[in-house]
Structure formats: structure tokens, C-alpha cells
Length: 285
Image (cartoon, rainbow, N blue to C red; front, side):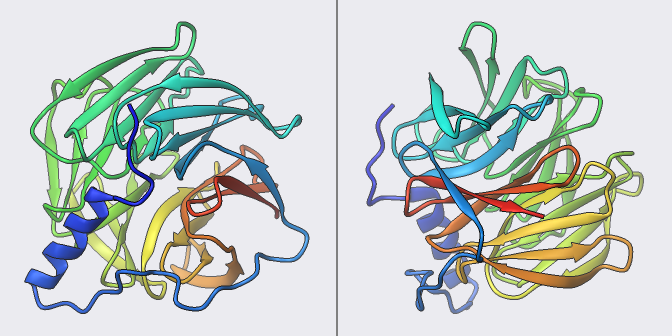
């Protein structure tokens, strides 16, 4: 499962494709180090944590550990890793199913969606010829949304990645994805465009965009759908967005390469992965 700390092939491929289109990109995203927001704490995670998800009961965090090909299970109150699950080489996105029993893990390196049974720790892999970067699951757990950053689209499938394929096109370099509680809207970060696309899922088309600044990466939506949180990998920050009027209301500094972001059920805590520090920043909201 091991992957080099120094080689992030999916990100390299994303940058290469952007350069082919004439876009100017920064290979070293953190140009000016920043300090995390005052009062934030950190929880140890695995090697190069990419994304984070919160369990249905709010007691566990799950981080995809890119460099080790694993998922770390973190006890929120104890602030420690309590289990490590073998997943797949180069895991990126992660989403916790509402049933509390399963995880969905995206691997762009292997062009695979992994379905993990949390009871047994057993992973089932479904390869389907696409490179998924981010993943979100529908509120009823029946559908999975996968960002195809190299194809400018989002793929909708079932939780095994084996049927009911629908592709939503017209989203530039999508990496992070979040779905509204009523599954009417989908939010996808446009990495090189500095914006978030808002997708009407009934129409399967982009109906609005939100300007958020450079390098938006991971995305998470509050349980009631009123706030959207976006991690900026290139600028060490998290944008807080009013999902009603589609505007940025706050910017939270988070150091060491924030990629993934998740919010707990009652929107009192924000969790952000620190890719370069093998940790998760916990922010009280």
C-alpha cells in the first residue's frame, strides 16, 4: 500500500493538464507559511492525510493517508488514532455513509472507488476507467458523487461504483464535492478557476458559481445546508460560504497544506487535514 511522501502523481497530472491548457500553476502551493487560527487544536493523523470524514455519530474521524495507502480511524474525544485500515494506493477523497457502517474512498492513482465495511475493515474495490479525486455520498446512502478532475466532470454512481452512471460536465478541474441535504444541489470546487460550481442535480448542469480565491480543494457542507466550507490547499486557509446568498463570509487560516475538510453534525466543529504535518486541525465554530 505504501506510496512515496515526495510523489503525488494525481496532483502532478492535474498540474500538467492545466499547463497544457495554458494555465499558470504553482507547483509548491505554500509560498508564504501561515499560522493556524487562534484556539485551534491538532489531532495526530496518518502519513500525508488527504481528506477527512466524520462518522454518523460524530465520535470518529476517518482520514485517507495518501503516503501509506490507509485510512486512519481517529477517536474525537481521545484525540488519537484507534485503528488503521488498509485501503488502496494513493487514497484521496473519503465519505462516510449515513448508515454508519461503510466508507467510500476514491483513488485517482488506481482509477478505483473503494467500499470499506467498517465492521470487518474489509475493502471492496471497483475499478471503472476514471480517476476519481473527491467523493461525496447522498443523504440516503444510495448514490456516490465522484469528481473527475482530469475530465472536468462529476460522476454519479451507486456505492459500489458499478451501475447507474450519470456524468455532469462543465466543471473545471473539480477536486472537492459536497451534496445538499435534500440532494437538490451539488457543490464542486474548481481548483484552477478559484471558484465553486453550484450544480442543479435535477437539471444536471451548473447554475451558479461562487468566487472563493485561489486553489480551492476540499469541500464540506453543514448538516442543514446553510454553510459551505472550502479548504484552499495553495493558500493555507478555509473559506466559509453562506450557501443561501453564495458569498464568502469568513476566511480561517489553517497551516501546513489543508486539503480535506469536514464539519460535525451540529456544526460546532470543523476538521481540516494538514497534508504536510500528518495531522487534523480542529476548529471550534
